[in-house]
Image 1 (cartoon, rainbow, N blue to C red):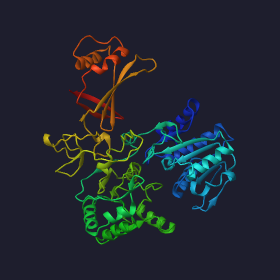
Image 2 (image 1 turned 90 degrees about the vertical axis):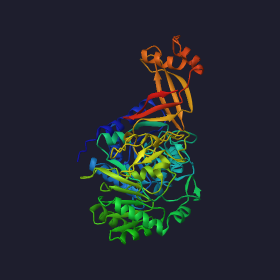
Image 3 (image 1 turned 45 degrees about the vertical axis):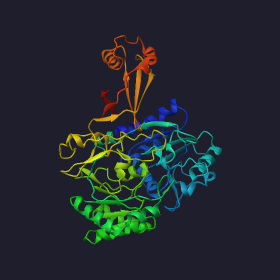
Image 4 (image 1 turned 90 degrees about the horizontal axis):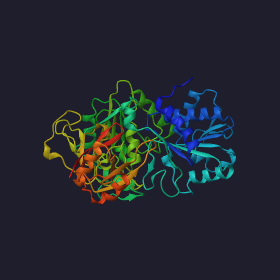
Length: 520
């Protein structure tokens, strides 16, 4: 069966070839959950063998469901593909095929079995630890000892890790840059992912005093804090009320006991619900998910096992009952509900965990210090008419158009916000903490001055051409003189004397955030 790639998938494949023609090192391809990374990977592998028939390819990931999905995608795309699986969990140990889909846990000590590998493609590349003693580290070192020219490509929806930060920055990085990025808001605008909507929850899980390990909440301490019967009953009551018009509920819990107790509370209301965790047998897990996808089960609670390798387009309600400091984990949770399905307009997010306020919008992440810890709150306000969670700077509710009183608008020290998607936002005045000026040169164009405004942890940019009308007005507003610089170099020399705005008005427009005004 021939598969016609979507335009962005085709662009992603072509970007890999451009990277290796023009760049050194290992590239990342960034695509949101639900946009078809598997077919993109498989088409690249197919084309690689078409161009270079002797190429040996290894597709690595960390869960058996993804191994099987990627292999199945390859066979759907190319039924005669010389492909096999090496995975203990799937009871297959093919080390001879030209294309091997493998689990890192099964193969990391078996580089000698594979011999020469020319191309390694890692799905869910954010799972790679930079430690050379990790499974990925040991395996890649062994492969390079056999073939120093082996090429590495990473695919991920989230090109960063808690603690380590951006995958292509810092010491011991395995990747060198992003070859192609397809953003969540683009996928929604182009009709490849569904919208998400939010409702204020009356119940918020209290994480005061919860211990942290490795930058995130320690599971035992977290579960002890949130697995409280009174709280669970309140949460379940809200889910039932707010989700009464939703078909399939997926709930993320803080531990096995918590997930079981939430399941039992939902069942007590006569609603079908099952639980999946790391101890669930493969047979039971497959049966539960099959019944969930077919509609025989309305709700599934889980503990950290349905964040990757799980495809259920029917999910139209996500319940976040697991607070997390990990941006990656939060985005993976939300991604489970953004796939398209017949009759599904959007996915309702009920965030009892405070993750929305903790992390801000998910399509405009700024890992400025190569960490992205999620510390701090994002300013939001709740619509008193429909309970929608709104970005703090809006004047009207994005859901019901309720007009907020002017005195309800509050500015905080960061430019993050409580909405889940930036294209749902309106323009916001945000406080400026620092202004920096740089010379910007682009081939075929006149030099411009790049102005960067630091607002909390966010950076907003504008480009000024001093010689045009807008540039002259921009300069006059800051120096109050018509003695304008003759060129960018002179402008940079005089920047220290410029008046700096106290606030700027920023607005998300398409994939860019533009500066719409300045307040001095």
